Structures are given as C-alpha cells and as structure tokens.
Image (cartoon, rainbow, N blue to C red; front, side):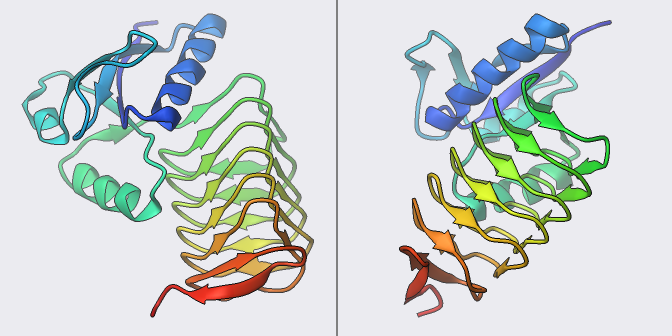
Length: 215
C-alpha cells in the first residue's frame, strides 16, 4: 500500500508527540509518509530533527495530496484552522496510537488524535478534531463534542457530556452522568462532581467555578 503524505500543523510539544505517534503507527503498518511540520512561529528543525517546512500559507502552494494533522492545543485556533483548511479542500488524518484500547462501538470524528495508552470503552462518541493525550480513560456512553482537549491522565466516567472546545487539565476527573459546557476549562487534578456551565474555569476537589470566560 502506498503511504499517504502527512503534514503536522504545530511544531510545539504536542506536535512533536504526534510525530512520535505517527512513527509508532508506521512500525505496525506503514501508513504515513511524514513530510514535516507547518508552524507560523518556528523554522528550521525540531529538537528531534524533524523538518519545519513552512507556514500555514505555504500549504496552498503544495501540490501533493496532503493529509493534515492539527496538533494545536488551543481549541479556538484549532477550530479556525480546521474551518479554513477544510474549506480549501484539505483532508485531515484521524490518528490513533496502536496501544489505544477501545471497543468496536466507538465513533471518532475526522481529525481527532488518540495518544498512547488511552482506553475508550463502549458506545462512546468523539467529535471531530478532539485531542486525547496519553493515558486517558473515557467511560461508556460518553460524548465529547468537537475540539475537546483531554490532557494526560484524564479520567471521564460513564454518561458524561463534554461540550465543544472544552479543555480538561492534567489528571482531571469527571464522575458519571455529569456535563461540562462549551469552551470551559477544568484545571489539572480537579474532580468534577457537579455539572459545569459553558465558558468558565473550574478548579479544585470538588471542582468549583472561579472565573467566567465571557467577562
């Protein structure tokens, strides 16, 4: 099978971890030809020696049938880039690390990235352009909307609803049958035991709202 050309957008820490993910996929089955990174603020090479081949605007001059991976932590920037580049006809890779475990009753949207050691159980829906960092757990009947970001070690129980663009920090957890609104930020180590509204910051055990992002 001919390998598919892949460019990762974002040469920061997340992007470099995604490059490692791609290498591990290729060790199992040679799927991707990783060409390099696109980054509007960096040039040259990453510390690992991966090439940074240009800025976002340079994508439009590339003639190859590229697949793109959006390795941008900020959900609002990820959404803007996804809309712009989809509108221009680019295709996006859905990347799942070979060590991730999930049932056949899991649906994952276009452009989402599932990192090493994650477990996704049954009847789970992940929207488009979600990022699930290493070692996350997502329980049964849970729904993650588009552009959700789970940092390493997040644990989400069953029947949870997480709104578009929400961000759950390192080792945060959510008990069953709770919801987190669109664009909200859950601090690292927080325990969500009550519903969290949209566009707020919540921290602590139990998680309490400390800031309204609409202000």
